[in-house]
Length: 162
Image (cartoon, rainbow, N blue to C red):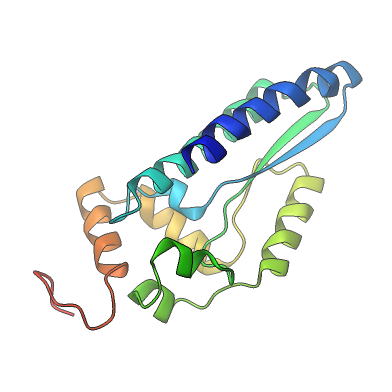
């Protein structure tokens, strides 16, 4: 996961950029995530960190490439209908029970449209926008506890009341 979200994204970008810059034309669309705005989540610290990297790299490159004819867009979806829920172990959490998933098609279309409009960041859906904002506003400790609570499995008990 770290190799894919950090090394591969960086290497492919590094390989593609020189030709795009010399042609003064090109578009890069990176798949970040709404979790890139969050401090972390239980059992997913590395995933959150890699998505923060993709988001930061995309924003930084977009600024560096301004005026070059090359644009960089970070697509930062929230809960999306895919196999991620099961593979990540998030099945049955409050987040996946309560937050309606966007279709992969709707997320991809939003990313494509945003890229074509030369947007630096695309956050499809109002709920994802709220999650991104919620990750940046409160102190990190509060955001961490909210994420821990949201990613708690249904029926599990602990220090926080379900």
